[in-house]
Image (cartoon, rainbow, N blue to C red):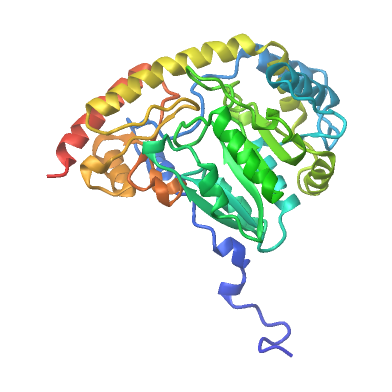
Length: 399
């Protein structure tokens, strides 16, 4: 008999699973909560397009509702959506995926990432990832019983992760490498040659690579390299993508995972017991996006590029050194000139000048000393935010 008697409630600290207790609250949410209680705030914090979903995409979902298409779909997703996803990947990157067994439609890329980790990780398995990184990466690994292993990246090297640095961290417990390029929060883009070097490291050590390419269409002056399209890597790659960013469909929650059959089958097992299927109307909208949304994507990318140039130039002019992002829609300036921590900078900027940014520390230890500024907002608001930030930096510049 244990010390706790039958019928006696557990101690409070034992009510919550240890792996959940390991997680830190999102470093982003604190500032969104503050923002919600203030008026007149310019937000450079929320990582989503300021565009409404193009009407023809929304209209497709409206028509599906009018016709009564409100039932479950296949666990794997609507066959037509899987077919269109396969067609898109073939046309865009030359990769062949079988819609019947190598594609799973998910509730956004967040679910796809969670499913991938739970499908492949045993307790103690290690996943190597860049630092800084998207806030959910290490958390999803921990929740699946794994251990995240960080590879520092620096502004001086364009925040690109290096194959040799990855290899130096491989142990007998390493199961996978997790990449996210174009990158949130830095806007970094990995070129083909560097990805080939990582692929060779993964091959030598028999590792899976999970490649989160949700920002694949949002690149500026460079070409996106789809990791799964590299020679000989498809059978050891889990490719994640979706509709939120490129098609302004964040709230629709539709993503996809593409991988070898046995991995998709394992992910589908978890998906069918926890989610069942992605929302039917959202899947209909995603089909329309893939079929007719290319012009919308091009228009938004051109607009984001104009905003990108304005915000990077403006940040540098007010004294915040800023790496030039080549993808996504984030600038990641250094705040070293102020001597403030990233959390101090973000909180003071919000309270004093009503501009919301996200502290770089929310994205890992190597994010300290930076803040994330999302430029998916209007040029007028970006310019006003830069004016306010300029005043703030002048007051707080390190003496």
